[in-house]
Length: 400
Image 1 (cartoon, one colour):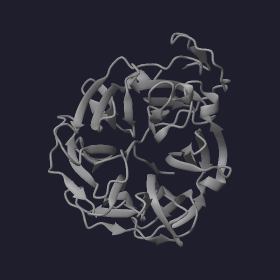
Image 2 (cartoon, rainbow, N blue to C red; image 1 turned 120 degrees about the horizontal axis):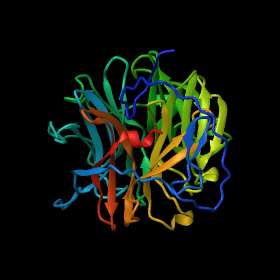
Image 3 (spheres, rainbow, N blue to C red; image 1 turned 60 degrees about the horizontal axis):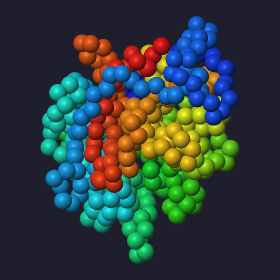
Image 4 (tube, rainbow, N blue to C red; image 1 turned 180 degrees about the vertical axis):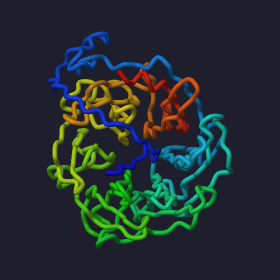
């Protein structure tokens, strides 16, 4: 089967590594980072180990709130590759985390090698609407779509979803068509698209609906399209399939004859699931319960692979009851038994007052000196509005 999937829609054709690592019980014991063990010829980090910190790290600010009086809340980045080391980077430009009517989705073209913006910003939105977060889809025919979590504010000042909006580019991001409502899909209106993947010529997507939208339920569903987004079809309600759990932000990645899926639960738990092509459960595990350095859910999780290893990246609270500030975590796991092998802290290892942040979007960039893991994210400190940032790491540090 020809598998196609993106790291934030980056094309990767990489070998699959199949490893078997025994599960580790969750205990409060902490050991030193040097206590790794070798199982089946493979170095495995005990779950009780203090998380690793990469030695190579470069940070730069792409867009800053500083010097802007209004519309300076910059958050929720998403990226899609364009070729020639260029990407489109979208993010919210608003006033607050939420409930800021008039907030727009801003899109820039960015050169990974030079670190420069190479096209004037494009903005999508309306005066009384909130463009909360866009998610990219690259369709098999080459078209690009940004699918936006769109909101309004009611008379009581509370935000609510108005149904998924989208804008399509047919010239690789140089321009975009008008915003349009996606509308009903098999009688259901959806509000928030999380991730997508292509197998053959079929594109699958994880999309969330809400109880006050048409369909009357809150769930994360799997949909597919065979005609580049013109028509969508329902496959399965994952909230039901995974045990009637209430879930939100999710990610998927093709694996063997099915997919890997990760879900953020409203019960503060993060889970990994292995499913078949119809998204029926083969295996699942609760990594929050099993991993001492994960005390709650992983915020805005994304899955990707590199050199046969599988990774989950997102916001993590390492200590119970959020006694430590939020961190950006990279989690390597075994795709067969879904056990965590190692956890890395990519940002805020010094426990600074990060008060808002971490919806990471990773992409791998080849250089003369090797492959760099680039992570585009947002981060606010000491209650200030957040910046859009890029972090770079030596990808070899995450491979044994």
